[in-house]
Image (cartoon, one colour):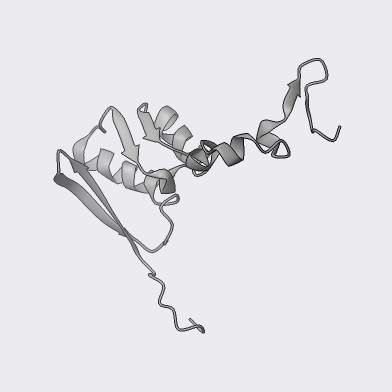
Length: 116
């Protein structure tokens, strides 16, 4: 890169069970979010089924991944979404101007900002 940084061009995914490596795969996409679905497909082809629970860190959290795990693989994802830890903080919960904290108006099916 122009600023002297080196960025990894590959992403290694490793699946484990009880600290034993079940499989690994190298991806040319550096983001975890886009590697989970193809990696699970590869694991399913190798082992014929996946574990009941798919556990991963928040880097893998995303609606497409949750949907693929639930629907395509019929498993339970135990993956937090990216904003989870931020949403748990007092500063986040007490900020009335964040859309997540707006009150829902059921009659109009709208959310109400503190400014109206």
